[in-house]
Length: 108
Image (cartoon, rainbow, N blue to C red):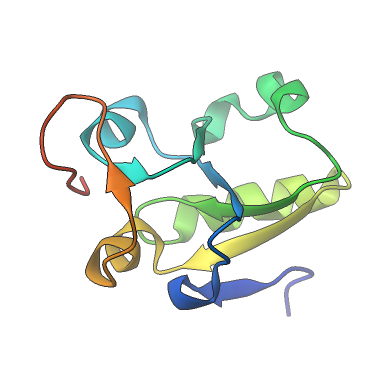
């Protein structure tokens, strides 16, 4: 059993603080509107960009990288929740997305 929660996309509050841990090229192609982007391998070095008082919802493409990020963040004393199904489910359920390249947002 894990020490943290995984929630389906539909249970993520509209005003949630979302941390996207995918790679740069994935982020550019499409991401949740208003999310913060820190690739998984950069989180330890960029921890000061995260507010320890925020309830973080962590997302990747399908849930594997976000699962590892949540494990680590919880171990550091942060409140973090894994978004089950990741950006694939985010896209499928029609949640708001934007891209950084001027094209229609997609999930890579």
